Length: 368
View 1 (tube, rainbow, N blue to C red):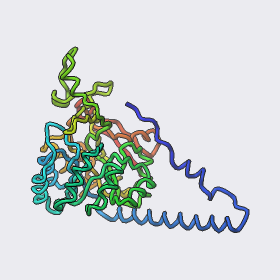
View 2 (cartoon, helix red, strand yellow):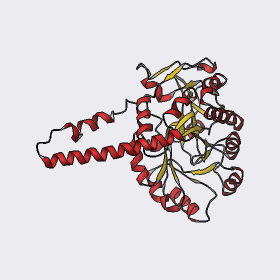
View 3 (cartoon, rainbow, N blue to C red):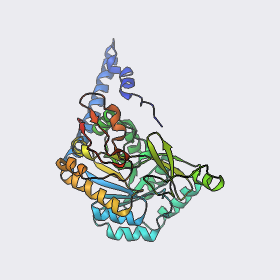
View 4 (cartoon, one colour):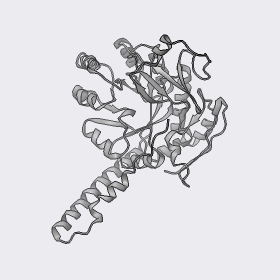
């Protein structure tokens, strides 16, 4: 699947920018000067926020599918752990007892309850009852849609914006901030140039998925039901995931398809997103939180990955050495959307390594 090139926002703003127009009278000139002052104030606010991010240590968050993964993430040094609202089978949804047990062992880290990405009326009623009763020992909610933000912003739990809010620029981030969201996860579709602009201009802490296999598509259609109804025309072993997991075969490899406890299917990346080689640049650019999508890993695999990124955060200059010692779990590593600006000199030059399960060195140069 290929996505179209994102719309260039800057060109639209420049076309409608009143500063590019000539005003023949003093009244319009005063308005023009006021607009300039307001813009300068906003720029100062964004610059100050980016400076604060640069002065603070980057933190590490992990999105998990079960309690064992959550415990492994805490023990490996995660600062934030998100409990999935779309738990993949065969795991079951998190219980209040599991949440309380995880709250006991989290130490100084923070624990968040994730919401389903697609919520119906029943979901809203269930979570409303859960969040309106006895206060849960959590530090916030991973908000996945506008309706959930509107519904649960008044419950007394801090809100963190999930990937599927698709934050693409600082204007979107500012809109959600006014609705009560305190931290945002950048869209995984952002190429390098747009991600850099977002990190510089956003007036709130930003989070970026740096490792794992985030869902590319999620759907109500139960693809697993087809395997129970229709006779297969042939059988073949999966190369990177268990045979119980459906895969979409393309010329790029296997895209796993997981079914969650709601009966919905999630199409994942064929490779693992891995931004470890550019951790130093991300930290210099002002990134607040780097995120690992850990729902599809075994607990010990996740523990190793989290430990590696923890070490890279503490000593960014060792990121290249740490990357050289990693082995991909799936079909290899990819820079994701960041490579789409790779043809421009001084932006990104990358050779995707570890393809077909064989690890090769990946050369990455980034200037942000």
